[in-house]
Length: 195
Image (cartoon, rainbow, N blue to C red; front, side, top):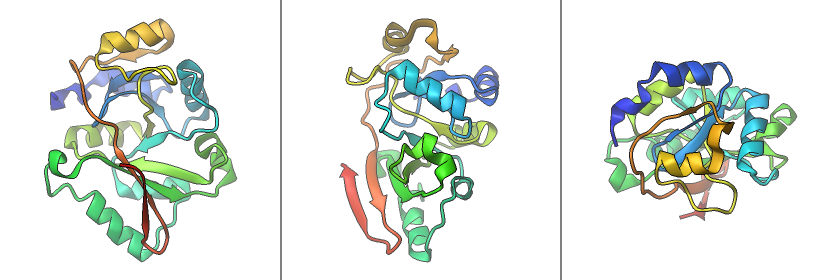
């Protein structure tokens, strides 16, 4: 995938202003919007027809952003996150990993949907992390209507959503797998929720 697709001033502007975009993520095409903007998050649920009880994965550009979501990490969790998000290996070797952490802040119910857990992923792509540092964390469910196939091209996404989103970013065909999802407990133990 072309790393320059995320170096896009229009994309940054749309997202910073609370808009919704469809773009390739580090895994598949996603529908993205600022996680800190409740109205944007609710709009994404509505446009995607996403099940209201299902939280979305949140893309972050830096581990320090977890504190903005009332996430308190134990020392062993910090060490484990370094393992999952070190990026010393190629993305092909490690695969993308989303980490589910406890979040009991009632003000963030619009994100955790009453589960008291949030899933975060820090992408291996430096270019995508740079975008996230400009926009802030983004929720990034797959760019398809609930229970329908993932979009492999921007045209697929346009067929689903038409003009219901503010911007489409064409990264060419993307045939990839969704991330592995791991629950990371405060004692450092892990449960694989999606391999």
